[in-house]
Length: 336
Image (cartoon, rainbow, N blue to C red; front, top):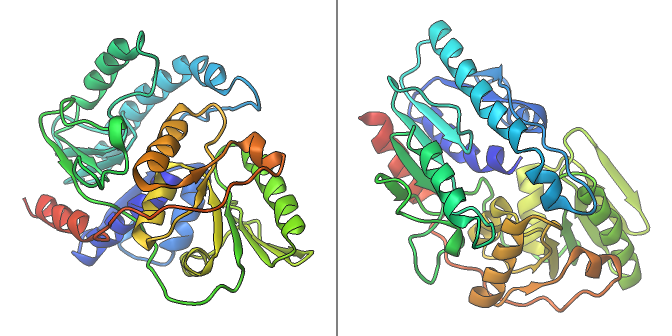
């Protein structure tokens, strides 16, 4: 879902420039993209293979590691799918958001990713870097949705310019636009991530909001789920971008994951939040620590949330120029 939402501004940018777009996706991401781009005659959707990674409440990293063969098989299937698709369709450019098998040697191919240093132990890091260098070498260039290295970089040590010779930092990307308004719901929680942690977070947020006695709003990130209201708490399972922007910008206390796309949205809207990494997701844990150190954001664990140990909100969001840099890079790439 995060990859789909951060790609949307680039898809819309290409449409505005007059391009016809083939969108290859699956699952909730496909449902979400179709809802945002329905009835657009310049867009055609295709179902693409992809790994369906399973998570567990405990030993999440072990669960992910055990599925490495599935991930490698998925990359192979993406390559086969891409070759077959190119035989049926006239394609001029390939843009892949973190899909390592979607490329072709005869077609200009770009990979967008913020993860150019796998968050693994020091002992495994050299091996991991060899793997990622081999994977990204199949692409003509790498786009990193981040500010250049420095005080406003939001990915920190997770990104690099040494993995691929043609790496471009395209600035921050978000489909959300800042709005100025007063808090309709002072307490706002953004729920995201895989099950079972998505539901665990949603339930814990609802309990915490009930204890606070203020109006609460939960944006639950579950396409097609509708809306519910109970005990002065509204839950939107498939909110519009406008509803999300209004909720975030109008909140007094905001709690969310430290997933990369969520952080992109916070920076683009200029909002601070209390960050809660998905348990066992090392990348989110590192990003949470980085934002606490560099931008003063409060952080806690999911277990803290379940036990109602929530810190006071703090911090200042890093600076963003919106999607301007990325759209300019896109226009230049499509023109050549």
